[in-house]
Length: 328
Image 1 (cartoon, helix red, strand yellow):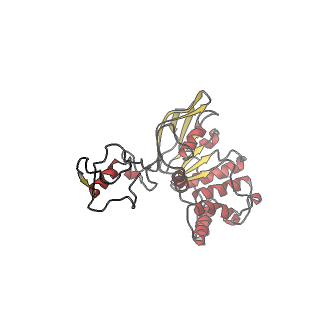
Image 2 (cartoon, helix red, strand yellow):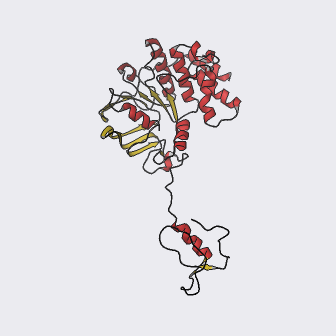
Image 3 (tube, one colour):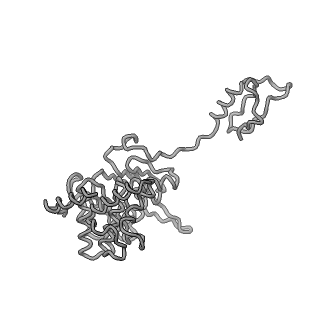
């Protein structure tokens, strides 16, 4: 308890030496029969302040990669000996067992595994939807340990673009407004700026002619492309896709994977959870999990440059894409 204004001594009044433990209620000068006072009010206040227990501060969301010792500025994801344990009554389930991995900026990584392998748990941790039981996780240089829910929400909105299997579009809302939502949550107040960024994202996924369509007026593949546009509207550090082709037919799957390929070829980092080998073949790197541990990690293409199976647009397609962007 601190001194109130009513109980505070005068500026030249002295008080007894405070105890060496945590700060407690302090009264005015002791009666005359006690030992003489030894410190002034100013030094006493400094002493009380120094004794107050410090609250561990979370790493601020503005911390950059270069500010974190031991990390490369080119590392978007650094997972260090992460363990995740769930308690089911008296039983402990070890979903992840000492997982460590690093993902560089501009990479395209597919994480694979059977049901119960830990891939969904790893995705939740990478997406800041859950925290590890042990170990550390750095996202774009930010250590997420000790963050509050509000801080985690801010990191998710600014640094991660989510794409889900079920699209998660608002049904009675135009496609362009669905894409604007993370910008609204992120605090971009000017409607004109939001609309311009959302339109550019829609053009990037090839839906310039579907801005004002409702989700029910779009095919499954088109809805997923709207979801991808929503994910990139905030220009996040990485795109995190959870089984993005799980609800799509073969044609739509090819279209969506072409979108991911083009985004990665343009320098965006993509991390994708999938159980389909054909989908994983589009990635530059494939990581396999079994029983919460990485059992295979192999590279299919260099970090820099286009991913495997990516077909660069023709000159005519590139010109049309540039023309569409220049109208915004």
